[in-house]
Amino acid sequence: MPIAILLTGGQRNDGAVFTEVIDDIRIPRIGAGRPRTRPNAVIADKAYSNNVIRDYLTSRGIKAVIPQKSNEKASRKNKGSAGGRPPAFDEDLYKSRNVVERHFGLAKQWRGIATRYEKLAITYRATAVLCAVVAWLRK
Image 1 (cartoon, rainbow, N blue to C red):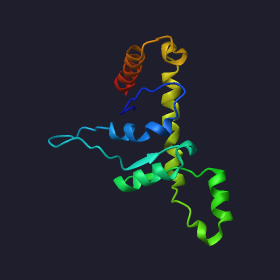
Image 2: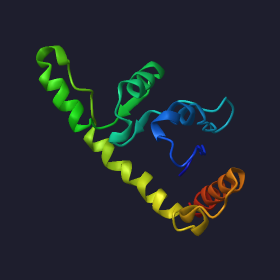
Image 3: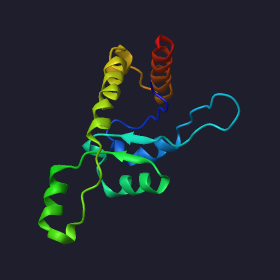
Image 4: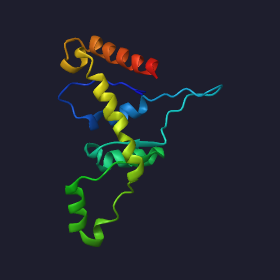
């Protein structure tokens, strides 16, 4: 289920706003207490495999489940022992990433989201939020 929505330009890289999306997460607690702002783990694809994102997640105490790009692996191996260890990767946890892709597929069933009919950012974001609300209500 979607827990944070951040609207950017279509040509903008998702990794550029990664920290803002993570900072936007608020999960209410059952009962009293402030909402959780830190997930246990972030499961992302290879596009998010860079040191800036990994260092940010480590500094916040969040487990990064991100596979390495092939060029990163080759670069590390070319450096030999100076290349360091590969980052930890939990393959079993990464298998649950399909949930994210399934929600993108669900959102693209909404014609306005898939084809970007709404020209105003506020209208497009409202459609995305409405899609998220419907997904939560179906659950």
